[in-house]
Length: 112
Length: 116
Image (tube, rainbow over all chains, first blue to last red; front, side):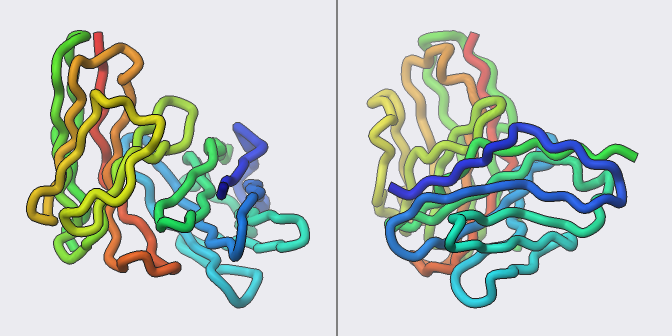
């Protein structure tokens, strides 16, 4: 069965510093991986996806993610964090039927 | 693109009562998904439709839960005889491509259910 894991419940970063939110996956076949962000009282918003091609995927709001097949990881990154990036981040994998399976989420806190 | 709309935003009910939520997907989207999210957890899949056909239902989903999408447009999720454990945020999402590998889901803001 397809699954993802987010090993960190919370990540704290100072504004202006680079950030990384970790995700590892377990799939049978090719992985189709996604990152979503959830702001308070808002629905989940799509950030980026990896289907095939370049291992470095660029997405919305300056975020990018690096697909690493050997480490079965898909970490979310941003070179310089903003306070407004503070939110819940979810990694997800698409299963064979088409639905997304989500990780448990990582709360990102960016302090001024 | 007016987004995915969910109503009501909040629902408070007493244990044992029935509740119904509505989701209006983005108009041209043929896939519609229901998820449930509790505090500190990621969204948990409940069921999904392609047009009016319900293609999959989570094995974890109680028989008290039923969903419909009668004309392939809006969808309703009903919970009968609610229990306190049903308290959660119920999320609806839609997508346009029928099973395409690159499809992304567009989410509504959710319905927060509180069962007293």
